[in-house]
Every structure is written in C-alpha cells, then in structure tokens.
Length: 186
Image 1: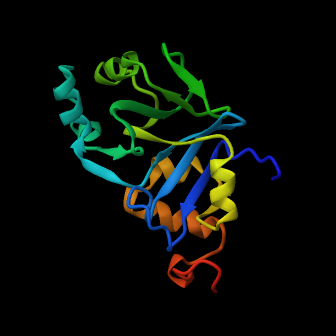
Image 2: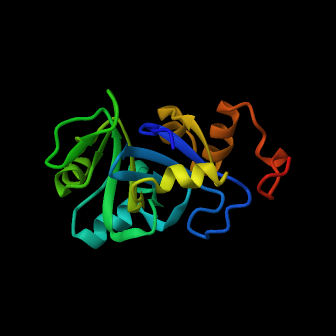
C-alpha cells in the first residue's frame, strides 16, 4: 500500500460508518507516521464545559466566555486524559507541533495558563483521543470508511462544533446529504 501522510488533515466519516465512536465525525489528524496515527474528533461535544472541567481539576477559572466552551470527545482512547489543540504552538511542557501554527499539548501547564488569562489565541480542549495502529488508517481508507481533506484551522477554531463536518465536506465540494450510506454505491 502506498505510504501517505495525513498529518494536518481531516478524516470525514462516511455515512456508512457503523462504529458509534466515529459515526458522523470530523477527526483532525495530529500525527501520522509508520508507527500509526493520532487524532482528535473535533465535532462531538460532551456534556462538560471548560469551566466545569477546571472545577473538577481544582483550577480557579473566571473567564465566563471561554468557560462556557464545550469540551470535545476526542476519541475512545484514554478518556480521562486531556488534550489541548491550540494556535499558536507556544512553549508548554508537553507540546507536539502539528504544523507551523498549531500544537497539541497534554501537560497541565497549558490549563493553568488558560486559567490565568495567558491562553493561546485559539484552542480546543478534548478528553480522549483517536488512535490507529500502523497501516490501520490506510486500510480503513481503502475500505472507503473515510474521506480526507487538508485541514483548515478556521473550521476547528472559528465554527461551532455542529457546523464543522459540513464545512469540511464543502472543502471537497461535496454535500454530505448526497453521499450514499452504502459502501461502493453512488
């Protein structure tokens, strides 16, 4: 199978996706290599706001606007672990640069900075992540489980979560409602 790098791409779940974790999802791929892939679902909010998350962690947080932002379901792996996707990359204890402008941080220092009003300009907080073993994502693409498109940070950071999947589809020039829910059929 041909080697591809889907880092900084969206995975758009096809309508036939039966896996309840990924049905109707838009997943941002943060890292893709020979060792596998790591991504965050960016359009599935959970019943938890940023303020409520900070309260659970014992971090004082008074920003009403940012505090009302929903926390996302990042994926089914390590649901108790937080991931902050942000722009700009910045310098935190545990940050992986995804591209020139975006980073993924898993260390608590970024949450403390957010609470202190020193947050990155744009951010998305998720619990859990999505992971693929070596070759798994390529196999799923071959099976028509996903569509791919280069990601847009505007979709992640500037649109409400319920509009992100449709906006990513529009990057491909496709109306989601026109896709068949049967693999191999138009």
